[in-house]
Length: 146
Image 1 (cartoon, rainbow, N blue to C red):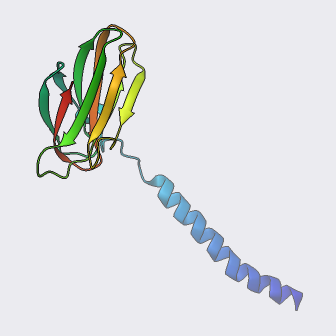
Image 2 (spheres, rainbow, N blue to C red):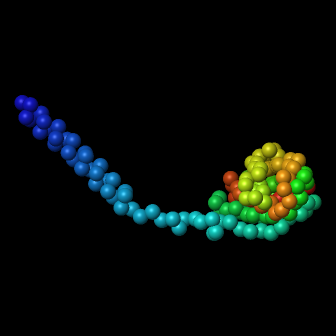
């Protein structure tokens, strides 16, 4: 009786274990393709922006990033906003990178609605600041520094 019970259990368990092992082997055999997206393909250098100016951009890829530059002096105080262009559902985000390469400030929707707004930002050093714009939803946007 014990013998037949063990045989019955083995008859059920063995195919399950072998099936899982075969499935795991198949999953591990699938090659990983890293060519889906890369920083270089999705990162667009847009150019300089100055205080008092307004520029427009457009991101059509959720992995897309557009980079603008701003040359500032230590102690300068600026406000930066990035909003969807009129009639657009774009949801932009801002990230500011200081001249030393460290992330200095970021914002998503502090300006209300889909507007990213960083108010009264005091710059810590002289140099070129990188303003990165990416999106939660694609489309055109307007960027301004005051």
